[in-house]
Image (tube, rainbow, N blue to C red; front, side, top):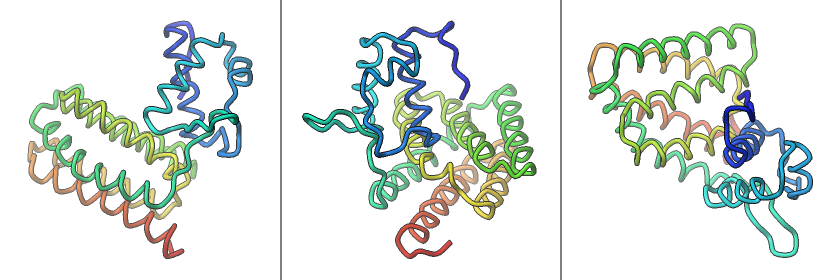
Length: 218
């Protein structure tokens, strides 16, 4: 994500910049997130950085250890499975609501994001393809027009994307295929099918992580 401090408050810029670096694994788990380091990195004063770290802590992106400071939160298998259990239920609902409420502009945006994902996949830029994958999900969540659902699920998507940003080519291929099926269901106004496809899509991701991180197979 390309951010500009010019059109954001300093507090929001600090929050989005640090979160983006965590999601894209630009900040490693052994890095101590000191205010001094982050202020220098993003050319900010201590107050917005401090507030950003507290917000990221409440969302599960960072942890705080007394006498040591802030660290990027570990993302273990159990964490991922719990996140995907929640995503399966809530994003299934979001897909259904999106289908019921989607505008032409939403459909255009979904199509664009799907094409950008395919474009980067064809260039073998899997990390960037997965960024558009995440944006595709966020577009559906936003189009549900349910702010409580949106606030909860967006955080879950962003947390899980820390692991999925490293996804391999086979996973990206499957994801693109499932996105096409999901888009077709939304476009044809079949809300029950959209919900079913989304739930299966998330369940497939959960199974991938279980196989990869617990069983050691792809």
